[in-house]
View: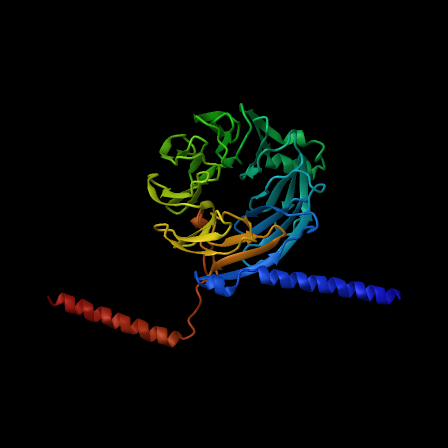
Length: 423
């Protein structure tokens, strides 16, 4: 009887798993749907979470991995190009408040409760954890030397990564976490945006209507830019510049190190979504005001489309935006002309990908899909083109034909040269 019960239970689990997999297959975007726009499904997978009580809280991307964070504190890491699940780790107790993770070359950092965890990017192994003096109001940010985070009381804290490693090696963490604190800077209002650092200058925004620039090494104030209304949108950025959007309808493009204003754009409505930058286009999303595409260099308006709510991604010629119906609208990036839409309402978790030309979307239950241009095996890097991997050059399958073609071309060039010199 016991064996029969076990067998029946196993069969039931297999049936549920098969049913779940079948339901996922039906939910996924079809090849026909994507082919209309020259797209294809690169991969799909399932993040690790407790589907009875968890949902996807954050999606984060770097050049190697895609990270899915659940409301229950589980982080799942996928290879961003192949979809291979690298690891899944539970951080802290279930349902503790958390912030979106961030990564550098070898580690992933996540704040859960009042603890910051450092994980190995490759296998998810916990390297160290640090106790924070205050709850975070923003995601952490990291550069080559320091880890930063902002708080509700207006403070920004900076921790020395080298000192953290020393404390870890001496088995002094998390008890001696305060020793790694490099500095604290206090503004007059809640820190509203993840800080942006280029190793030298740290920029962050506060509800005291200001954008700050600090010396990253010693917190010395370099400059402060004040607006007339609170800053509620996350800071946008491109190399060397910060994009400040405020409730008073303005977007400012500001040089990161000097604070000089390159241009100002007035959207006519409060702006609460992050400004996005792809190549020479800047996308601005005023509240209930659609999308403006403006020039990255001049700040001049290029086009506008109503009913758009947020940025999803872009290829060379197309831009993908969430619309007010929950679909993904497909527009021509050159003039904003509507081309169609992807009916992906179930995939309501969408990463605004400014790094590459891939689209990453997920359901709240953790079904993740990567979409790319057809036959585009290698991604195009938008924000940091210098990080684009050097593609291998493959030998021709018919070297003799290539040699004959080269000889013909050389002969033609010689003939052309002789003909030119005779005049």
